[in-house]
Image (cartoon, rainbow, N blue to C red; front, side):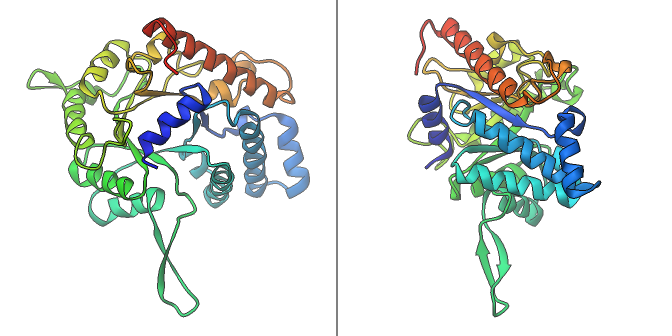
Amino acid sequence: MHFADRLIEGIREKGTILICGIDPQLRYMPPHILRWAVQQFGPGMKAVEEVIVLYYITIINVTFGKVLGYKPQIAFFEKFGSHGIRALERILAYLGSLDAIVILDAKREDGGDTSQAYASAYLGITETLDESGEIVLIRPSCRVDAITITPWIDGPNIETFAMTAKENNAGIFVVDKTSFKPASRLQDVLVDGQPAWVHLTEQVRDLSESEGMVGKSGYSLVGVVMGATYPEEARLMQQLLPKSTKLVPGFGKGQGGRPDDAVICVNNDGFGAVCNDSRGTNFAWHSKFGGNGDGRNYAVATLGAVEAGTHALNTAIEHKLGRMPW
């Protein structure tokens, strides 16, 4: 199924635009899980791998069906080396067994063969060797439904990812206007009187509406990242990219994006935006994010945060449109 059509089907089925982030950070993990892992596997990276897998499979089990999908941030896996990547592979395999929507926050960028290698690794197919030493094609272990990419190499990067996505019913989200404050000054540099991010948006629009990119739903497999912390820019983004889905980070306790701001890019049909919350869901039990307890209640706390996030976003959508569209 076309990626945008799958997103919309998922929103209708689950009644939410909320994406649950997967950002493993040991400092926010419950102490009893850390102790268990060391007792079972000894000190070191193998214990770290098992902590991550146990923690997130539990979170997936309690939230599956209550969120639209999941967004692992690859940096939090890469920092743990091969054991971190193995943890990611195991989590992705589990999400695949559930047929969950997965957007990998990888922010990849390059040109030529390197760009194609990135695209193949996460969205397409890769090579292996059969018993006779011949090259055969397989699904990569880190294959996902969509990834984030950065735009500075321009056409050779974005188009390679878009074409690979089109061939494999996948999607991409071009990092356009981030949620961080202050944002990169380069996004707001004026070029011919317009901020650089606006020029990028216009380029993304041309690609997103080109042949084969738009699904039956009327939405494109080419989306953008549009931070919840910049509501005025989000209004312009909605006008410039009506057929693209905006991946909206910055909602919730991590960066403080408000529900009303997070749904600005939602169109009159109720689609056009999906909203990620990472730390506010991942570590809802932790006192840093308003939780309490010793972490043994982390699954219940995450479920409560997901339900509260969905309620807040749906209330904001209803307030914006005057109705619930799905």
